[in-house]
Image (cartoon, rainbow, N blue to C red; front, side, top):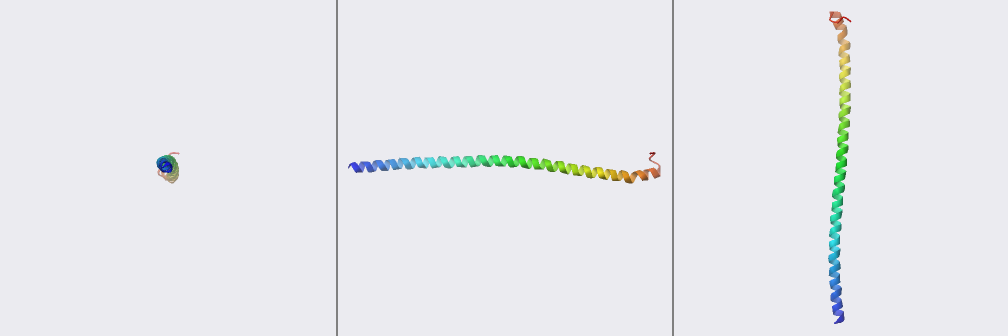
Length: 93
């Protein structure tokens, strides 16, 4: 009879340990999922910043190249038009 109660106590202890372990594993899984979600959010925010910075850089470069092309075109037009204007008498320089 003493061993029978001891077996039942061991079984009860096993059930308690098993329940505690399952609760621990559940909390551990939840923590890991939460950490992964936070890390993902942080990485996506960083990627968004980098993408915006790249877009600004591309925009500035494109603006610079377009302006340079426009100024070169403007100088070319002036270079071609000035002699013609002088010939026609519209320019007194």
